[in-house]
Image 1 (tube, helix red, strand yellow):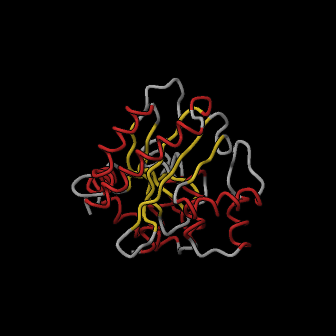
Image 2 (image 1 turned 60 degrees about the horizontal axis):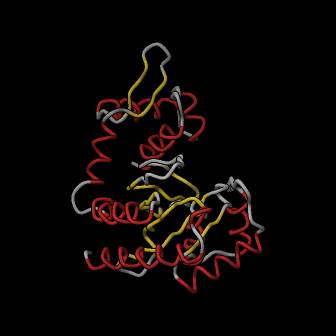
Length: 240
């Protein structure tokens, strides 16, 4: 099972697909074993093969699996109305983000604003766990050594990276105030606000994120946005 998941993750990152040998080499698998797993995944419509190139890629069956996560009582379905309210009231792009156990975060739900900017993200987009405002919350709640934090931090692709010392100060502030702000660092011209959502065991599981033009987000505007985001987080907690 773990090898199947590893193959699906790899193919999710590889475009326009990979051949058996390339997959086996990257994952350290025996090619015959890799081929067997791929054939099973093809039968389940989770993976498809291009006959001309013999390259494997994700298939439409993955969409059904994703839809089952997004439908019903999932975080994505519960957070969507709140994201729509935030986007409409504040002119921001609002997102519901999952914090995974693989040092990454995934956008599960999205509500776009009518403001004249385009944020290059969509449902399913995946980023480093320490990126932007959500990253400050993850670092604030996690049990990281300075060496580990610095290693992950240095690998992030910023438009205008803060110094590690400044970023650590912002992580400390995020821990104290229970919300975080990234202004112009991850993407120049954009400010990102994130609030944490905790699971039943008190662990950080998700964040609610709002993105807007920095020129329109002064301290007063950010304060009002954070207030409304807190209300949405509280409503989510009550719905669990």
